[in-house]
Amino acid sequence: MNSSAAPIEVWLRQDDEEIICTVVREDESTYELDVDALSMRGAQREMTGYFIDQNYEPADQWLVEVDSANGPVETVRRFTPARFQDQASDNGDALDALEVTTDELLP
Image (cartoon, rainbow, N blue to C red; front, side, top):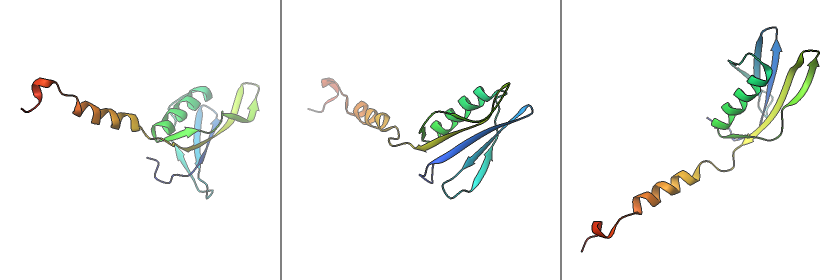
């Protein structure tokens, strides 16, 4: 979950048949995440979905840092903490609880 509330950079690097994901925090510390996708495009989609689920939103597009004849070898994308975290569903729950018919009202 997004506990730091700070922007991050997500780097994807293709090394032979494996894609490596490195996350860089504002303080320049890093950590790696497992990637299931076999292609760079698939890894970009996978990591974008993962970070959206972690309450981040993309700040820009995926940028190609290193390219080869076969396509991108290294890409990067910035993510920022989401500004609004699913407030609509909370409001809907409160409204559902208030919906009653006249038969349910006390005399």
